[in-house]
Image (cartoon, rainbow, N blue to C red):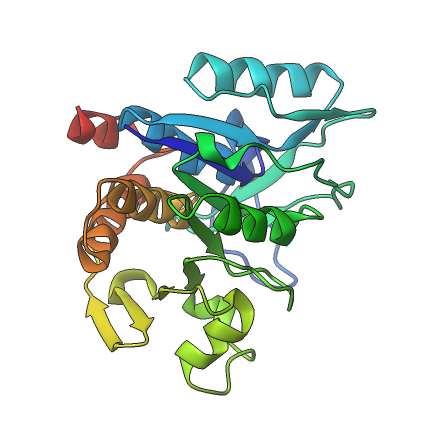
Length: 281
């Protein structure tokens, strides 16, 4: 059991089920799939809770009824939300547009800038995961690595060019398009710094590559019947975090991530489904 701090969004997702794939200029019918808990905080955090870790979430929601609903739902499911900030204003719904083949398009409003306060006492934490554009995330990560060498820092590659100090950097192949015109390891080191141990690049059903100073390795995907791809990357990251907290070698942790992702895509929800819970039980 590990103490894990997640810096990630937590959302109220409204699901719109389309009758056919999206295309420019098309005309579509949809069914309203209702509201469900989502965001990287929930999609990553709940699997870790089911794996018996203590998971605390750093995020922000509005001071409105939707914000209340998000926090109540997340807390009921086992996430510690005491570090979630409430901003003055409304929490906007995220629109998840789902097509019959399970692919999803996310439509969201511009978020207010989330500025992190002073960092926590890192001696309490075994792992810190970053999947947020919050201002100050890099400073928190750097402070964690200096203050507690035993705290493993894992980060998603940012959507922009900002630095992500970390031990393990995770990206998808689409995140890399148009951004990496050099050796992947050198690209990752320029973003994560000299403390970087591993750079993981996922590529859907083609599996994932891991790059390090020692070279590179491929880890296959776990094949699944795709129902809903929402949250697959978050579940993958959760499996990797779990593996690292259990002292697995990096390729074993990546296999665990691939397995968790396979459960996620086979489930009709944003958060991990019952199959993952049963596997972990």
